[in-house]
Amino acid sequence: MASLKSRITGSELRSWVALAATAGLFVGIVAGPALGASPIPSLNDNPSEHTISVSGHGKVILTPDVADVSLGVTVQRNEVTGARDEAARIMQAVIAALHGLGIADADIKTTQLYISPVYDYSGVQRITGYQISNVISVHVRDLSKLADVIDQSVGAGATDVQGVTFDVADRAAAERDAREAAVRDARARADTLAAAAGVTITGVASISESISTPWPWPGRGLAEDANGVPTPIQPGTAELTIDVAVVYLIG
Image (cartoon, rainbow, N blue to C red; front, top):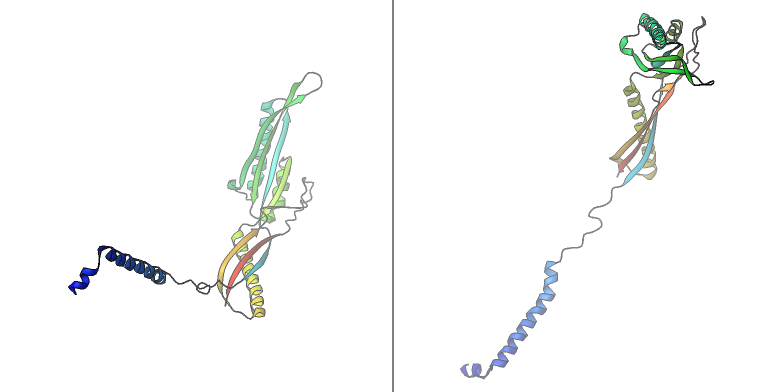
């Protein structure tokens, strides 16, 4: 054994070391990826949800139970103080008439008050008088009194009836009914599709809604004078609609 060791020279020893290192590198290349690679995920590990998308429509016919009407007084006099005093006197009479019909101060609101000069443009421009306009908005909670509100205000001296709009005091109840109808409509459509496709609805993935409602809506047939004949008022009706978009889960 001693003689064998003596026959291995220094250069031969270096050759054996290099060969061993090369063999180790080859083993690392072959075994390394096999040990460190992660498995490729299957497309079935996270399957897409199966859904049916439908829309639903719900509608409620609104019958108004409240109204707002604008009543005004317009006065023109030579002097501004005379116009102001006359307009104030008439408006006080109008408000007294409204109180007599049970309209509370909380439902009477001044919406417009202005004073403007009246000019004569023939020849040299000059002021010939002053005009005052005072407008109030009256919230009528009992529609049976609406015609009297207009007629008695005009009788008390109101010179302007600028319009009447109708509304419902409680929109929440109407919206709830329309929303429930829309969801029922959507579910009925989804059930029909599911039955035809031979699948079962298992839940809801998403739902959204859109609402369309008059706010408020104008009346029709409004007369602007009082000649002993009650002013005809036609509130009419309006539609409140809600549409929903629903995505149902199926299995």
